Length: 109
Image (cartoon, rainbow, N blue to C red; front, side, top):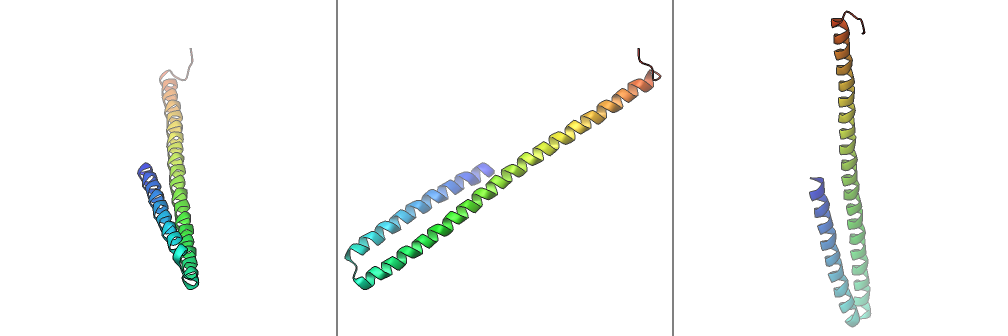
């Protein structure tokens, strides 16, 4: 699931970049023929596009952090499972050895 989300995020970032480039080209083309009043509007539009881009960047970073946290949680869970297995093995081995000692009357050869 985590890999799929990472690829989806990468695609969203690429698509967002394409949209932003298209918007920048449109603003640039309009700026070449705009009146002074229109130029101010285009400047405001450009600033708005930059704000949207900043927000998208923050959302992308947040998603990357979520993916990283998920990965850390999965590794931690596997490590805890391995430790439980190790402790169970040690306990079982101790019980097995106790059984052997009890069966032999507590004597070692």
